[in-house]
Length: 84
Image 1 (cartoon, rainbow, N blue to C red):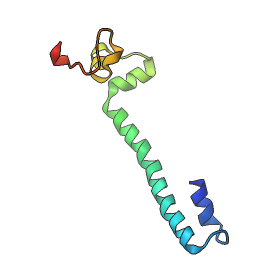
Image 2 (cartoon, rainbow, N blue to C red; image 1 turned 90 degrees about the horizontal axis):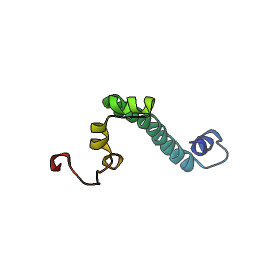
Image 3 (cartoon, one colour; image 1 turned 120 degrees about the vertical axis):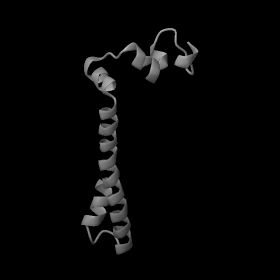
Image 4 (spheres, rainbow, N blue to C red; image 1 turned 30 degrees about the vertical axis):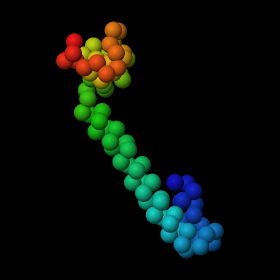
């Protein structure tokens, strides 16, 4: 964003076409810079067990089995809970 902002700011550095393109790219990058953190916050809000794990360093066995089966001793990738 610094590069596109610099192109937009310094009017004598680049022709109008490049400054217009820089504004388009700059706007899209700013939108992404807002949406990515918002998405992370929404996903974190939807999973309280994951938030607890980030704070405490541990999660429940069932959550680990459901979300990351390789963390649970004896589990293999691709195993489903119904198969056990």
